[in-house]
Length: 443
Image (cartoon, rainbow, N blue to C red; front, side, top):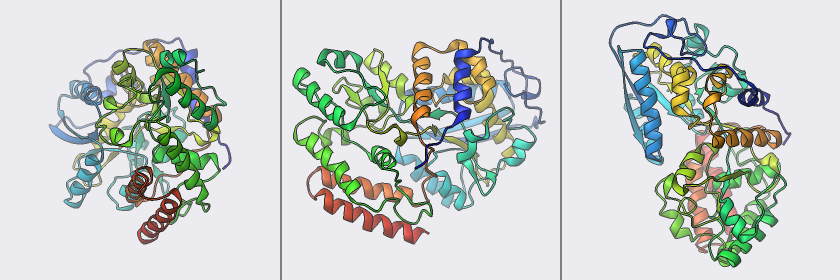
């Protein structure tokens, strides 16, 4: 896979360090006269009472609090628009969206994941946003288009990115120091990672990390110039099943030697705050965490945490939109929904309230408006994302419509392999057979 630079992110993130401009203030006036909107939207909006429905997923109370804060700011700026926000945890969110879609009752504003948006676009459930971008209801002036490229299909925009993230392996600096283990550097290898897991167990008597998930497997494949899905999205993107076998054999080795937490313990994790790393039970936190989860990690541990790329070739890493906001095609208030999306993306006070929780903003004007408020932790996140960008290759295309079904198959087979009910070799064959059948049928 060719290495690709995401230059727009570098420009935006470097602005945090270089700019010394002050932030704008907020007033309760609509966008057309408010200095709080970074891009200066000018599109007229009705003053008639409107109620918008929005949905989002939340794995912690902090997620709910941050979202509610933006909703309250928006309602203060637009007293005639009421926002009813509902959230669901984990897979329950997408199950709920499926039910609402089937009943033609989707909310006006839908929080959309990169892996799901293809499915919604393919089913004609989302409204193209180009007209609202053209009249600047959603104002992306001065924004590098690359940051929203993942929400664009057939030359139409269906989702607006909220912020940028990257997968991250957190680590507890104090525990590493006690074990005499060096913090992971850019050239960190899987072999060194395993040595460090053993040292942590021997010196501290604790687990080094948790088992690896599908997100790790995707990076593992990218490190071998492969991907989980092929370009046609009707088959797997790798032909050599030894990649699957090797990925699981190393985990079985770690499991046998007590280097990672028991699988049963991991299956009981209910929220981001609830993982072994946040409880101080492991020195590394590779539990499918993202860079925007750092606040939760530090709040739970009551100390600073380190951020490192996954072991292996850095090209396996990538920069990812944290999520998109989309508008249901069935919405009766698309203009107001677009206005809400613009506010969430471009309003300075909203950005301060979010505090980069859902990923680093990419609008240079927003970054300039909030850069003075960044904590030392956020500056470390900026540095981490900049470093990831330096090594990363381009993000894979969004998952196919059947991606969620394939993910369930992967999880079931992964559990069977790690519970030693089947061998990695048998697991690789089953995954290929079952995933291929799902993808071919969906196509």
